[in-house]
Structures are given as structure tokens and as C-alpha cells.
Length: 260
Image (cartoon, rainbow, N blue to C red):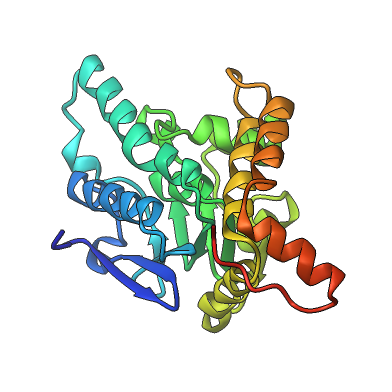
């Protein structure tokens, strides 16, 4: 796919995705969401890719929100379909991606931008980042999973406060409440995300996939998370990586995993 709104590059088995609408503070429009959906499909299906790093172009914004001009005249049915399509093809797809996805939050992450970051498995923020869900200021509520994922990450009370006041919080406050994993100077943001992904790349790929599936199951109302863990644990015993990992441990050497 020839991308117009994102930049996509695979380096050392990592897919780098950059929302490339700096003049619009990387706001999400329909075309950008479609390109993100395609990039995440690529990451999920390409065996070479071991992880994904998502960030925004420039130093001002990760994603400053959705492109309001596209839906300001929508009906109830159109609004519901907008949220449903976005959740299914992009936000839920990121969360379900079997490769670890890290958001490198460089500046403003507001509305759909914070929802995008929360859909990722981990979040690293630059020290100048500002995060928030200001939708109630527009007569809306978050529609891309924001009410659900924010509650999961920071708890009900803090989620209600952030959403109903529409206040932005600083990166340090976001780290304090568990919304982001780390806060670093902006110049070190990508390097910190790469450091984490480099550690993950040393581990067994199929085990990483199983762990992500089991952890996601813990938050699903339709799945028994403990049973999902048992099944994923069992699957590991049928992999060559399990044999390599246990053999390397017994031989007191570093394992070399094949992803098989």
C-alpha cells in the first residue's frame, strides 16, 4: 500500500510507524486510520516483524485528536458506525496484535491520540507530553475504546475525573497513575522504546505471542483468562523454542530462538 498519511519502515525486525500529518498535529482522519489498519495487518501477518513502534511526526504531537471536520454533521447511526469501524480495524487490532506494540508519545496525545496510545501494549512518553480525553468539551465521549482502556489502566475514579473534566495531564502525572510506563527526555524517546523492543527480541517469539494473548484474555468478559493462560502455556511445549530454551538453560548458554 502506498501510504500518504503515515511513514512505515522495517528496521532490524521492528516496524516503525509514524503518523505523518505534522501540519495537522497528526490528527486522525479516515485515510490515516485506513493506513494504520493496513500497517497493523502487515505487522500481525509478517513473521519477520518482531515488534511495532508507533510515534508522531515532529516534536509537538503524537496525535492531537481526531479530524473533527470529517464527522461534525454525522447522524446517530453514522457516529456509531464511525466508532465501531475504528475500534474493529485499528484500536482493537493493535491491542490484539501478536507482536508487542509500543507508543512513543512525543508531545500531545489527546482524544483519539490518547486512545491510540492506550491501545498499544506499552507507552513511553517524552517529558513534554500532555495527555487527555477532551471529548466532553465537544459534546461527545471517547469512542475508540477510551472509556474502557483508561479505566483498565488507571482505575474508575481517575478515569471518570479525566474524562468528565476534560483536563490534560503531564507526562510525569501519567507515569504516576500508571498511564505510561516511562517518561524520558524527548531526544531519548525512540531509543527507550527500542531498548525495550531489543530485550523482547531476545526472547522466544511464540512465547511472546502466547503471553500477549493470555494477558488480553484477562480483560475479556467472554473468555476465562486462566483457561486461556493454561492453553497458551500448553502450546509452548510443542515448540522448538521451548526445547531450545530449556536445553540452553541446562547447558548454561544463551538460547537462540527460531520462532518455531
